[in-house]
Amino acid sequence: MEREYVLKETHKPIHLEDHQRRILNNFFTLTPDGRLPYLTYVYSTPKKEGKTEIAAGVAYSWSRLYGGDCISAANDKEGARARMFVRVVETLLELKRKRPKSFSLAVHESCHERGFRGSREQSEIEFNDIGQANPGPHILRAIPGDYAGEAGAMVALIVFDELWGYSSISLNRLYTELQPQPANPFSARFITTYAGYYGESELLWNIYDSVVKPDPQTDEEMGQRVPGLEDLPVYVHPESKTIVYWDHENRMPWKTEEFLSAARADPSLRGRDGEYLRLWENRWSTGAQPFLPTELIDAIMAQGKEMGLINNMPAEAA
Image 1 (tube, rainbow, N blue to C red):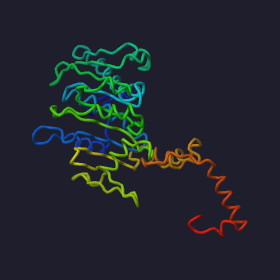
Image 2 (image 1 turned 180 degrees about the vertical axis):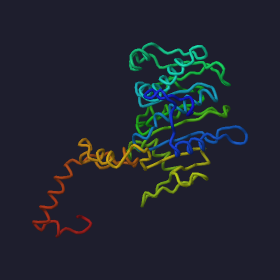
Image 3 (image 1 turned 90 degrees about the vertical axis):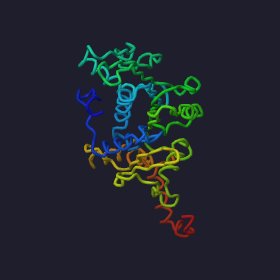
Image 4 (image 1 turned 30 degrees about the vertical axis):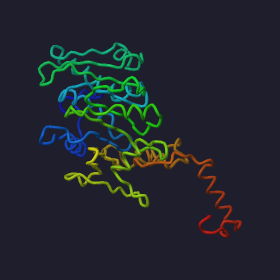
């Protein structure tokens, strides 16, 4: 993955941080009988920790190593193309530029010439990499949240981007319909996301609750840890062959305390402390915004204390 997956910004192969490399190596080390160890992979971190790049690198590497078609699914078709799908196309275009004779690529011109945001009708790329152990053809498709059109689809890898947003009936059905192929030893789901909202992100919550196992009293995460990765928040559910990396720490070296302080002070998050925790600490949120600003509530409480009203209230009411 690190040798071939090229970043558009630098024109150089992606560089994984040590924790990313260790997690992905564990995720995809084959079993003694030559199969993938899990059917469902969840990669969940705070915002701006490289989730989209990881998903794109996995999809690209998967095609070259194992073959088979790959589907990129997001909250809607534009979302799927605007994230992981676009990143893979950018890498393929770079490889085509470097190896024009051995690499063939079919991309709709609206994806290439109009910044990948043109016609919503185009959502498929096909490439061949001559000279590789698995030359192709490889197909990657970005799909909308229309489960009916994908029912029974035979694909090797299904990538779900930002699963926290899968709250509608159609998106839940899409997830249910797109199952790994039992007969294919290299078929799986790969999910990237950060935490969702209580009572809304039920699909993601069911996975998190079953695998990570938060204590209802303390929120301590009690799920079964993975041998060799005890220092990282990686949890496994052997019965369903699901593995979850669920991190609250900002590990990327460029995310300094100064950066996080600025994010915490973002005016758009004023009075929405839970949203900061969801985005930048990957913690679940109620999603509710106070009817009154926090500052006004504090002022009212202070005035109530001065008037002797709050001091006379029972402790549980206060």
